[in-house]
Every structure is written in C-alpha cells, then in structure tokens.
Image (cartoon, rainbow, N blue to C red; front, side, top):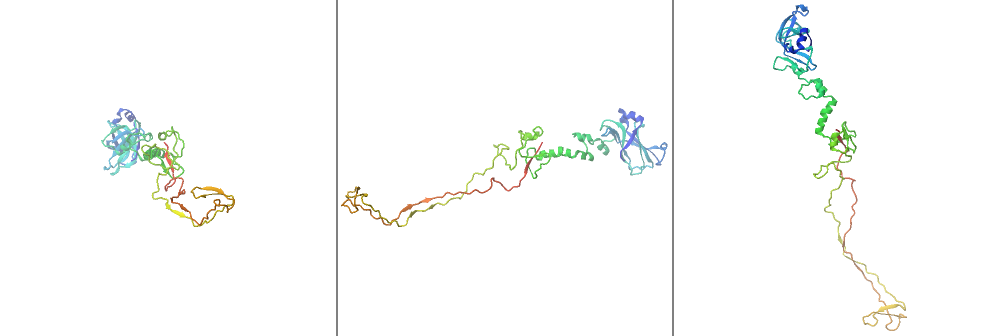
Length: 356
C-alpha cells in the first residue's frame, strides 16, 4: 500500500503535540466480514506494535506499520487506528475495503497532520531500519540537495536528476574534473575557430583579473599570451617560463663539403713576335762604343757616320714568354632554399585556455 492520510483524534492531538507522542506505539486493524458493513458493525480483528514513527522530510508525522502477510483474515479491512499505551486511538485512517487473505499485506505508511522537526524519530520498535524509514528518514531533502549539505544521505532518483541539472553538473562536476585534467593556464589544442563556453582562444587579449582570479594567478599582468603560429617547448631549469624565443637554426657544418684546388703549373706562350727597331739620323743612341764596358751615348747625323758614331739595334727573332700560374681555389656561392621558418609536418590549431 502507498502512504495513507490519517486524521488525529482530539485525544491524539493532545498526545501527539506533546512529549507523550512516543506513547503512540501500537496499531489495530478494524473491519467486518463484509465490505459494505456499517461502521457500527466494525470491530478490531488484529493489533501489533508499529515499526517506527518519525517526522518526514516535510516535517509530517509518519507511522510505519508491517501488516502480516502469512496470516489469513476473513475480515475486510475498513480502518487502521494508532493507539497509545492506554489503547486509546490517537490517529484513525480509513482504508480501501480490502479482504486481507494470506499473501496480502506488507509495509503501510500513515501520514498524520502533525508537524515536527524533519527527520526526528519518535518511536522505533526494532533495531533494524525498515526500507520506508531508510528512505524517509535518511534521504536527502531537495533543500539539502540545493544547499549541498555534506551529511551522508540517501538520494532518491528524482533528487539525483535534480543534482545533475546541467548548470550544477557543469559548475560542480565538469569544472571540478576539468581543474584536474586541464588546470587553468594549460594551453589546449582546439580544432575550431570558436572556443567552447568557459574557454578563450590565446591571442594576446586582456582579461579581468578580478573575475578570472585563477587565470590571474598564472598571468598576473592580465594578458593571455598570443599563441598564434607558436608551438611550445619544455623549459630548461635556468629559463624563464612563458618566455618568447624567436626561431633559430642550430649552429652546424656540412661535413665532406669542399671546393677542389687545381695546380695549373707554368704556361708558355706560342713562339712569335720577330721584329727590329730602326733609328733615324740625329737620333740619340746608347751603347758600349769603346768596348770598355761602359755605356756611352752620342748621336749621328747619318746612319753611315764616322767610326764610333754609328749605332744600330739588333733584330729580335721569334721568342716565347713563360707565365707561372700555380695552385689556386675558387669561392662558391650557395643559393637560398626553404621557407622563412624551420617547421615540421603539422596541422593548424587554435590554442585555448580555460577561463576561471
């Protein structure tokens, strides 16, 4: 049976609104042999101790009864009554007209119009927690879900969906996991030009350090680094984190490279160039006129002048000249090749960072 609405009696109001509410510990089943019997013909045909009584999540007094399943009754159930220690009815509850044959029974919940402190247990018969009590007393309330209380509570399925609302799921679960997976300040490669909610593309923009305090702990100047066209390299111990460094080519040589050296030796010109020199009269001349080893000079009025005054130039025959060239080298010019930067095979992405 589901929860039934019960009505406190005048006597019950006095008892249940006082410290004597714990004396309401028994129940009795009231009915008759027919389903349409008049109330004057009803009688009590079974009584037992209630399992527990407590104030539910709404502060309503709740009684849990365990109707016998293995017992066969000839009567139709018309009413359930909660009794105090003096067997006076404190709560009465009219029920559907049910014939309680063997196999019909189980846990019944009565709700009485008495309010109190949420979760307060008024009476408990056994040491074990009943299923109903477990969910009624120890379940989290919607208010506790919304206020995120830290007490250990059971969560009903509707409350689970309530706790997993998108806003709550993102704020409490996803962002909490994101902080572990990609903490604020970690650059993430992203394959679209639109950053997801809560993230920004890293292109040198300013941010509010008062709004994004975690981001400000990484970049106190309030500027997200410009990562367009940039890669990242692990820093050495003595390097500054986040420092920009222009791309460079590692210093290197080209082993085995050379320009050959050739010894061209001496070269001789071809044999040619026979010629003579002529002198006109009155030309000056020089020569060893007296044969004494000294060069003298004079002049002649005629190419056939007197002795000692005649000078002639010998005719030069064909001759060669020798030129020494020797060993030498040539300078080489290497043409430019390649792009403006050193790159590897890659795909273009946007670097994004979580804003928090």
